[in-house]
Length: 74
Image (cartoon, rainbow, N blue to C red; front, side):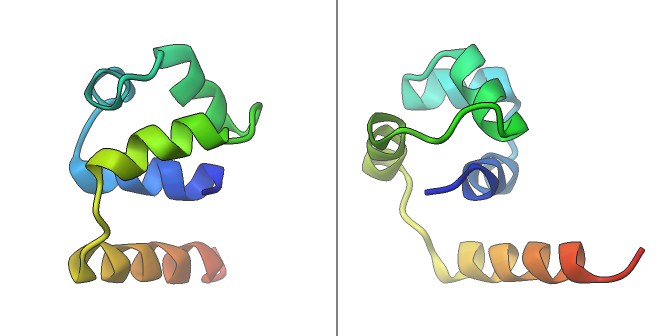
């Protein structure tokens, strides 16, 4: 899992960083540093998220749309 996917999961769930950290048993600083790209998503963090979050077709579509929008010229 990379930093962008972690943030995409949080946005898809509609959670603040604080809520996301609490929901997945992470510290707020880990979530913030991951999203900012100051720290790679560890295997432990990815595992905690994977245990509770299952990617649905709706999420895959959300992720593809987010990627497409980020690639469009501004």
